[in-house]
Image (cartoon, rainbow, N blue to C red; front, side):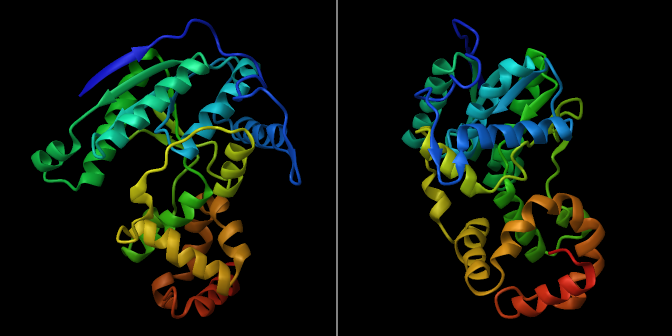
Length: 302
C-alpha cells in the first residue's frame, strides 16, 4: 500500500463559496443550497455526530455521493471550525477508470483548497493471499487506510457518504442472506471503525435519500465519476437496487421504500424484528404486499 498527501495553499472558503460556481440556485423544491446543507447541519448538531472545531477525514471515492458529501462539509466547515482532509483509496480494480477516479478527487481537493491523502493497493493480490472475496479484501484495506490516516493526522472521525438508499439496500441484502437481528439493524449514524475502535465512522447523509444528492449535484454542477459496475445486475446489491426496489415502488407502497430507510438504523431491532420475519415468510417479489401488511400490523414500522 502506498500513500501521498497533497497540501493546499490556503484554508477553504466560508459558506457558500465552496460550490463550483459560487452561485445560489432556486428550484421547485426551494433553495437547495440552503435546504440540504441546513438539513445535514441540523442532523450533525442534533445527533452530536461532529463537534465544534474537530479535525475530520472525509472518505471520497469520486462517485456522486462522496463528492456531494465533501462539498457539503466544506460549505459548513468555517461555521463550525472543522478542519477537513480528503482521503481516497485506489483499489486498482478498474484500470484507467480507477486512475480517473483518483485524478478527479485530487483536482477537487485542490479546488476546494483541502489536503488530500491518496493510497492504493493491489486488491486482487490481497484477496488471493487472504483467501477473501475481492469485495471483502477491498473493504478491509480501505478501512485500514482510513483508520491509519485518521490517527496519523489527528482526526478522531472518518466521515462516510452512506445515504438512506444504501441503508434499505443493505437491509434486503442481509435479509436474503438470512442475517439475524444484529445484521438487520443496519448501519448506524456513528460507530467505531472495524480497523481501529479509537477512530469513529460517522454518516451524516444516512437519513438523506439518494434523489436529494442527485438533485444537489445537478443544480451545483458538481463533477463525479460513475462506476460502470454499478449497473451490473449479477451483483446482488445492484439487483436489489435496479430490480427489487423499483418493483416495490411501482407496485406496492412507494412511501414504504422512502420513509423507512432513514429510520431503520433505529427501529429495525426493536420493531421490525419483533415481527419475526422468518415466521411471516416475507417472500419479497411474490408475496411482498402480504409481508408488508403483516409488518405494519405487528410493528407499525411503516
